Image (tube, rainbow, N blue to C red):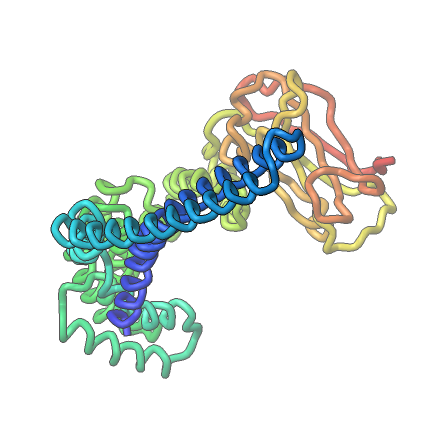
Length: 417
């Protein structure tokens, strides 16, 4: 089917090139013939008008006028007949010339049309991904498969046949591993992930696959780091130091070992990759919890200044618990800039103790970039971080954090007019 479609497209492409050339040559010949006839008729008409003027002024008699008009008509017929003979002769000569010198007419475009598909297929076979395109249906089924063991087993059979027929297909190995992992066959998944990785060049895609290798090894090692896992992690980070799957694995292991300082370090790296994602918000909460654990142990897990906010609703205020609450630290010296740090929660979470530091940055600047800041908190009825009429909002006084920890108490009470 692939070759049928490409052949059809090739014929259409040739038509786009050759048909305009054929039409142009025919049109030019027709236009030239029509132009000559029009010139002869125009001259005849012009001379007729002159003779009529001479007749009207009395310079010619009617008999003389009739004789001259008849001569002109005969001359016009003779010229047209002669031109047709000349045109036929010229056409025959042009056909003979075209047969003798095809390179000046259609040969070069035709040769280019014939040559282009061979070049295209040659380049595609060298740099293209035709084999993977043909397997896209199996790949897409793997991506769309959610908690369907039977589908995973069917895909394992199909992809297994693919790699048996041609084992030099890294993405076939990768999706085979994904299906093994989805039904808990981590030994087989680790082997398939490894087979995929060794067939890839040192690109970010290989770092991603190595992250899967490390995760499968980590599970098989009962959630402990081994020398083999550390080697895979080192290889992946040498290609892409910020490969998310590797950072997540390191952070998860550190949290499991209650090494919260290391966990916070890698959570912050993950947050930097997409500061506004839901994952970033979840990790910020994890950082806040870890910092509280460290503070309880007499350690400081924050890097740079930390703003501790005791946030509550005004006494007697009752609001829907699902309404979103946005808390932000802003630069007091410059208005209109994105928040230096921000987090969102819900009314049901209040009262709450919130700690914001540089890891909560949502724009190009963090808390350390400003000497004087203020804290704002709003309850949004529309779900937007920008307060609108009817929302509730409160704001602290400006203060200097001095690169240390600052504690602010804020009560939401004012309604936006």
